[in-house]
Length: 221
Ligand code: DX5
Ligand code: ZN
Image 1 (tube, rainbow, N blue to C red):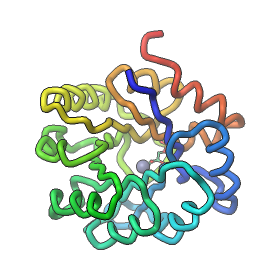
Image 2: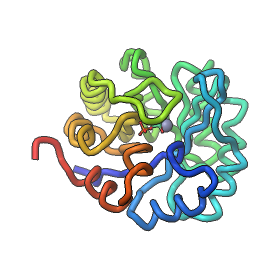
Image 3: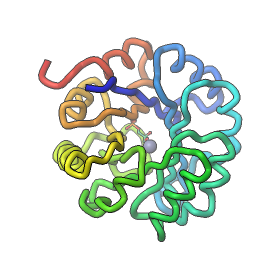
């Protein structure tokens, strides 16, 4: 099995101390930094834009995993890529032209990802699997951190894993929402390889210990 990658979500960091918190999670062994971009329209919350991504790019070597929870993502893809995003993930539910948007991300030398909400059937993204480097399975309804993991996400991850294998597609499965030391082993056993964690990391007193526990506790062991 590939190494499990941990992507702390700065949604749960201290907004007056982003630089400090980002350096802390990097030193604590985080693999990617997850940046939740919300527009107050696709989701009922507003967060960050390209300016923050550009500033973060200067202070960390971690790949920036930008999760666009915005309508008409085509309006901003290029600017997020230019700001330094390594992965740009758009929502199936938000894109009017999935293929075109994913190709734009690739053209801009970023890695394309596609995300699905908890109530979107996994099979809807079948045709897009060859076009992406990651598939982000939402295990909460997007918009807020600190929500409880939705249990049927496990079956959805398994279904996606099978679908990827049967098509010979190489995309990684990322899971986002309610990931903690209890749910991490379950999603890993189901087939997830990248775990986003906001509250579990930033609300803890020991980033290093939590990141290690999220990564290393395999299902059933
Ligand atoms: C939710 C965001 C998540 C969020 C996860 O809409 O996409 O990335 O930060 O937060 P936790 O890990 O606290 O559930
Ligand atoms: Zn996210």
